Amino acid sequence: MNYKIENIKQIIVTKPLKLDCGQIIKDFPIAYETYGKLNEKNNNAILIFHALSGDQFVAGINPVTNKDGWWNTAVGPGKAVDTEKYFIICANVLGGCMGSFGPKNLNVADGEPYGLKFPVITIRDMIKAQESLLEHFKIKKLLSVLGGSMGGMQLLQFCALYPDKTFSAVPIASTASHNAQQIALNELARQAIMSDPLWNKGNYYKNNTIPKNGLAVARMAAHITYMSDKGLQERFGRKLQEKKSYEFTFDADFQIESYLRHQGNVFVDRFDANSYLYISRAMDYFDLSKQFKNGLVGAFQDHKTRFLIISFSSDWLYPTKNSKDIVIALNASGTNVAFAEIKTDKGHDSFLVNEPEFLETLKGFLDSNFEIFKNEK
Amino acid sequence: MKNEFKIITNLLPAQSRVLDVGCGDGTLIEALIKQRNIDARGIELEENKVKQCISKGLSVIQGNAETELSQFPDKAFDFVVLSQTLQAFYQPENVLNELLRIGKKVIISIPNFGYWQVRTSLLFFGKMPVTKSLPDSWFNTPNLHMCSIKDFYQFCEKKKIKMNRIIGINNEKISSINRINLEMKNLLSEVGIFLIS
Image (cartoon, rainbow over all chains, first blue to last red; front, top):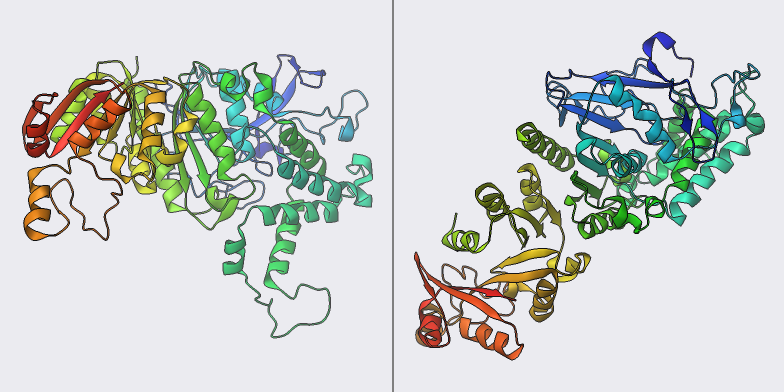
């Protein structure tokens, strides 16, 4: 988690922002990254929202981790979201740990990292905090907003708050309201972190005693929810990890155990445990239907935004039912909506891996909508 | 574009709101948007066809019209179009009621089982008919509830559904159908188009 600040672009949001919890924050940093070039007419910009464990480094090589950007399968030159054609912006969310204002930032009041003194934030707060980026780039109207999972929640919130700021929108494997199972799984992750003694009520920055075990277990549990039963079975089955028979210990005998441990271990090097608590909490508080008189239908009433909703048949974390609820609300409000359920065994993670049906659908939608947007007066 | 779609396109007023149920690859929707500036949407069951529609920039949702029309509010559309699909539903009457609920008017086309070629196939050869508008064999046809123009006409009368206009298609020829010429048109039309409300 020791990144070089020179690799991170930031804007400082000077406008005071009243958070849903009541606190007001101002002069805080929002980190971002861009790909491609903004054209002369400023009509080729796409804002991408990242998921729980993501960051602003969507494509190419992430300069902090030296690994591929999290959406390298979809974003890049000649890819579904073509960076030779479109200008891509992605911000690190408020509460994040990749340069945006979050719990590991120093509190001016006492010179200590915020830890749990950081205000509890919501998806709406995240969106309000990012909005200044559009001003920064002088973009009146985006071509599109894209986001999977929590990125999709941010996207829906963005569209509900700023209906005139994007021409189209693609929420992927997402929901308009976190349900009991989704909250339960987040709570499991949080309890794993908080029950690590090194977590120390969020005060671990000073001595650099990161609650690695807790955060790794949280990540392992989450990782299971990102894959499907069939996907797991086909990839790992009962295969043993570099051994011919059981060792009759609690070491990682099975490949799946070894895989999960690896996923947990690499995660703690790039992600802050407190950020995980705050961001997962924001997801749990998300219920767009409660923000409007007429429920979810009211969130999109009279909107001109053109939506494409995408779900994956084997996603049990944010199942098709969640996406269909959004489609139904959009239909009821008369909004332009397309919907596709992609048949795949790759589970919730389908949007992050190479899934040709999904990528072709996304590309077709963006390219055709760019043509319509260009010709709009 | 096939003759039937040209006729349907001409029946629809510019700038109206239209839903094409079972829209396939979106040929009709695209024509309605481009030629008549109609706000046309679609619903389609097959994933691959939905993908084609989305790539054309069309607002098409993947779904089963048999069970998923309930998501649309009453009178959400000026017109709902159902092209040669009614006979493929398990419960065509329920679907028809849903179409009439969500659309102010409904355009339905049916492959006519009263067409002379269909009749002669059964009469002279004793075989289930295979024609241009009924291209499948008995064992692989999606059609569960075939009817003739006369059947559908009488059904509408019985259910007190108003028939605003009926058009018969025979190859390139189109003609108006009414109570007086019903028997003859039922014999000579390959496809019937009903504008009902």
